[in-house]
Length: 248
Image 1: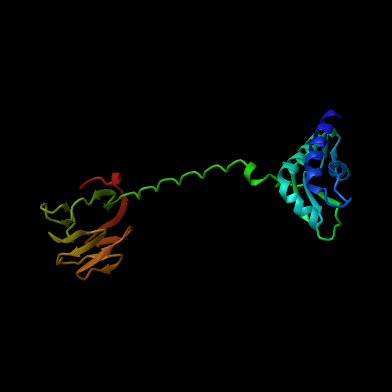
Image 2 (image 1 turned 120 degrees about the vertical axis):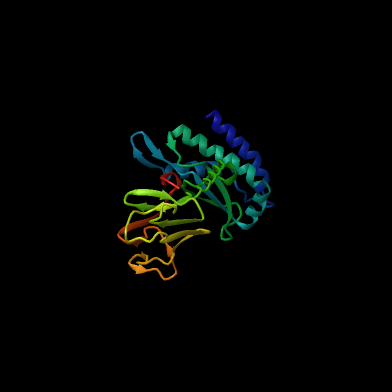
C-alpha cells in the first residue's frame, strides 16, 4: 500500500489546491484515484486465465467551475492519475492495450464538487509526442535507363547490325550487304537511319521492294518486326539490344 499512498498524497497536493472552491463542495483527490481504479476493475475483461484486459483511456468530466480550475494544473494531475492507473494494472496483473491517457472534459450538467470518469480500452491512446517517429520512406529507386535498341536486319537467319546512317543492299559486290538473288537489282534497296526512325528506300529496282506485302513507292518507314521482300529474298527488320547484332 506504500506506493498507492505516495501517489494519493501527490494527488492530494495537486487536486486540493486546484479544486477547492469558496464553498464547501470540492473534488476529493482520493475519490478521483479510487474511482479510476474502480472503473478499471469494473470494465476489465478476462481473455484467458493468464490475461485480463483493463481500460487505459480515461475522460474525467468536470463541471464548469471545476474544469476552469483544472486547466491550471491539468497536465501534472493527469500524469499523477496515469501513474495511479499503471500501478493498479501492475498490482492486479491487468494487460493494457496501449499507453495510459487521462483527459479532462467539461460537462456543464455536473455540479461543483462532482465528477464522472469514462473509461475505455484504446490501442491508439499514445500521445503524439510519445509515439516513435515513423521510419523515413525508402528513397525511390533510381530510374532504370532505357535499353538502347540496335536496328538489325535478319536475312536468312543471319543478323546485320545497322551501324551507319545508310546501308545499301543489292546483287553487286560493292554494296554494303550483297544479296545473291537473280531477282535483286545490283543496287536494289537502301536502309536509312533518321534520328530514331528507320526507312527503306527503293533505289529504282527492276522488280521493286515490298514492306509487309505493300510495294514501296519511294520510301517506307520500318518498325520492329517489319518484313521486307526483294526478289526471292525475305528480310525481317528488328530492334534488339545492341549486343545482339552480328555484323555492321
